[in-house]
Length: 451
Image (cartoon, rainbow, N blue to C red; front, side):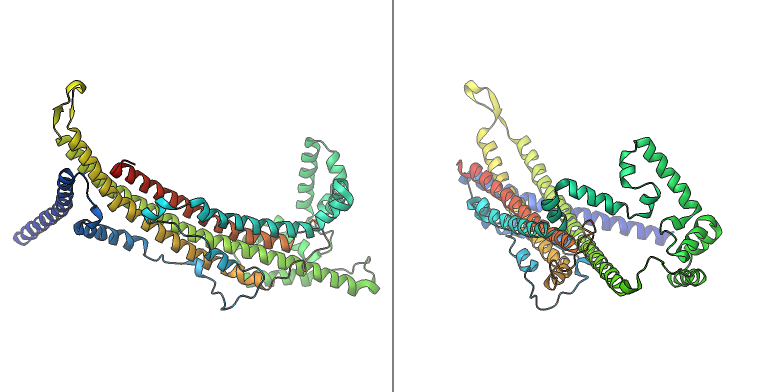
């Protein structure tokens, strides 16, 4: 019991010491601000940037926030791809992203800067390149070519003919028949088709794949089997599919022309390759989107941390200001009545302007600029795989005979569009920060010089 009491007393003593240390720390900075206020009252204005004690507090507080935002996350998914040393393609996104102009965070420089002249040329350059590549692909699009030759009516006829190739659409009477139906009739036809598929999954493939049909039917009708199948490993599922294929061999297609079978096979494989290639680009775009999203998430987290830091320092200054303002005496102002001593109010406002400029706005903009530069670097990593893929991409070489099928060029443009959008976002964000810095500078000049 005696030992426990001794530990409790020691803990209380430590807590008291820490409280005093914190109080002394706060009191120390407030003391420095008090002395700056006294100097302003005496000299009417002063240059707070030369005060070494203010700089010391600045560095101390900045060290805390920099430690927080510089901490690396557990995973850096934007670095999943390691780009090669060289890029020989016609389109090179990385140096274009590197050109994105950084924020002008130094307040006096921002105050004098022409922000439109600094940032708008880059934003317009990205927009122009994005428009050019979109127009190029649209011009080479088979849909556009058909539209130019056959008009909207020709496109509609081709769309109906392509839809009629679907086994489901065939079972429902064809696309033209569906278009003539009312909403209620289409709903009833769809319900009937769903019921027919449950009874005979082969309707989808026209019984061209009896093994797949037999397996689909068993999965739909045998709940225990479906449950066992879902719990199988990928290898076990593959073996199960092969078993059904072996037990239910495909029957020869009587419509196949032996003389043209090689040609038909080559066309089928070509279309399959084009479809697979387009799907690969789609998956690449999803990976790029995910990596850019991860980089943006870190950036946003750091922005939130910086905002909290700025609010905290502003709060300290605001608390000090409130106490000082409350202590200013009320004086006689002649015909204006009674009010706080105007000279002391002006000195206090001038001091707060110096403190806010030197300890909040200037350092805050530097933090935001550093975070922006990190964001740009991470975004360059994030688009690395896309940039390398573009280097060897052959435009227009992966077209499908089906004009309505997914198009590799269009998917490629969509991926490049992701990168272009990020470049535009970076530039617009930098311009917005610089505009804020410019506003801080103008406000400070207005308060301190009256101009």
